[in-house]
Length: 617
Image (cartoon, helix red, strand yellow):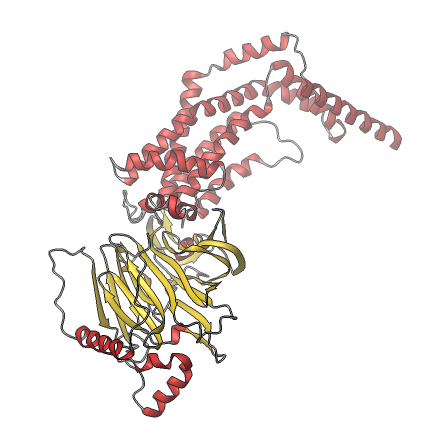
């Protein structure tokens, strides 16, 4: 929960100046380095940021200082405080985050996520090199429009709580209070004003602006960019999002939180009191697989705030850390963070939430991530094997009927007999007790699992930088060779798991196509073409995808092939199926309503066709 700072609302000017001066002298004394015996203990220090582009201190020239104060207007008093060195930052640190807040603008200018590395072994810094902005735009009583990112704040540090004040006088100020929670990825922020009702133009709505240029963290920048997206949750817990591709801009109402999601990392801005509205925008920066590209998307959000009795009071929470479902789940009752992980809509999300994630968490607790994927695949294929059996049984029946279907096609050749040919074929199916759709229905029943796992693997943080066999990172592609050139839609490298998955898919399709082979009908797609094009599409599509997903499809196809062979040679007897079909053909079959309706419709269509032919003659 957010900790609220209680500050004295009336302090005489001389006393405040004395406190500020004492703090300034104390802060510039040499400090003892943190003990190495407790590297994860929470620390908070203030240091000079020599890399900042802001001036090291306020203007010293009397004319320049006068002009600077004139620019600040009512906040000119802030420039007189000796602690307002704009180049300085204050550091807050716990076991998970290292956060730096600048005097200039009172905003976070650096944020490092500990114990995490980028694809090239560098620290994960979600905020660095001015890629983030956080500011208030306020109107003063003398009709000035000021942005706080340009104004000098005075820091005051107490434990893990940092107060940044922008003064108009000794006891009038705008305050940001940052609280870094111990051993959490949260930085709480309270925005409030004290005694500014007479200084600000409260008839003009202040606007809060939050910007973030998402930094590249993974090996394939184009693959990473597919999952970099701005996500919004409303007060009623519904969620919405901007487009993940290209540029997008939209206005939302009653906003509970915004997440600038960076594939496997997240940057949340959460509010206790929902924003009445907010305008979000995103711009795509990763236009190619170029090693020089270091940013994926440029995000911006603007929220109008409200004055209460002429003052500001807003409680916010920043979350900067991994997009880990198990981590988000801890805060789900309070903030609903799991909505930010795209597990799939409807039934796909339910399968991931109630089956895939719990089972995978259990497996990965006892074995490596690669073995956990293989065991998960085996479990899924065993559970789906009854459906596969039904599908193969239907294919076997169709194979038995193939000679009779060929005979019907030969007897009623030509476009003029198309309706009669279809009638006779349907009559044969009815007599034999075979449903031609029974082979499609099992395949459709497997689709929810297919799409659920397609959503799970690319967003599973637990796979990040976990190695298996030749794959160094199961959340990225498993390159075994680097090409000296780039192939369109394929890339400049060769991944092995997609090749293995494509080969096993080709074998599987050859087996099923051979089992289901029927004479080519007019207007129907060439099944041999489909048999070859699908594995090739998979080879190109998955070359840049997470190797964990390709590993799953490779093992899944392999197991499916073995199950089909087992069904064919040890379970299904085609002679018995043939005898059963012949027996069914001898039995009188009673039409159900659907079959009767279909027969009547086909007879009517045939009668109309004959009438048209007679009319032409």
